[in-house]
Length: 391
Image (cartoon, rainbow, N blue to C red; front, side, top):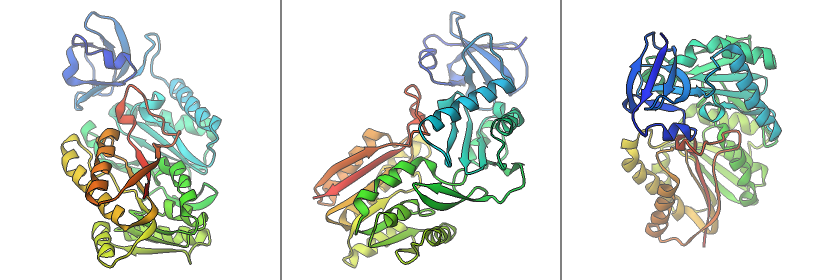
């Protein structure tokens, strides 16, 4: 008999509201038998149908529900239909060349990430159940969109919690994994094989464009610049100079390549350094800038790391606020969902006080619309983005 999972009393509310995850400690009993990765039907304490998803006893997330119709079963046609609906949504909003095509739970495909880079798809599979159906997902992409290639970037640590190995490889087509994309009218090289995430941080596309109004004629300091998305947009807006800082030599090589692609090599200068230490040296040297950009990697990836991360975020924001000229702007972000929006804003207020800065909030944004968040799943709303003005 297939798996039947019964929840404890009152544990169904979050899932009925739209969340997908059933944690092992929320389960009262499991009936039936099978193997990890099989489909399981989830019921509340009274036996009311809740949904279906793939089960994995290895993971704390026992079941990830993605079917809420009791008569529906997982199939290639279901994956194909979900993928098409997700892409149609993005195309309706005007996304064309590069965007997140499938955002896991937000597109009813838990643990599946699909990003589009020009004519190539980069996919990431984060659960055992979806791993077992990976070929159906690949076939669906080929049949729907006939891409030049599909690359897998399932080389993230979270897969270990599912008992899965870290892998990355070509799944379809013969292509160069370095793909030239267009973002905000700029040309950029996305390294699908070795770049961050699935190749590039697509979630900040609209935020990168938003800084242009503050960058015209400005001296700009881009911290944790990665491959230079913010630097390029600042240069495109007419920045007088852009200094791009990062600890990764590869990232800075990519910044220089992207600057050359767009004719900005005389405007954008790169420096490899520990950003925290560099900001302290700049302050000691009496340097200041019209626009400072902070887009650091996630300082916390678990709830236990929040306290230390809070100190790290505050430290870097205090330093940045001190380097912004009066009348200038600070762009600051956090990509960790554990660093909640209220906590992030509290940190900014403390940083302003401790840096003796009077700060005005100019814009508050989040991830781009190709990364929609579920109201019922706070984990999907992760990006905080503030543009601040120093008085």
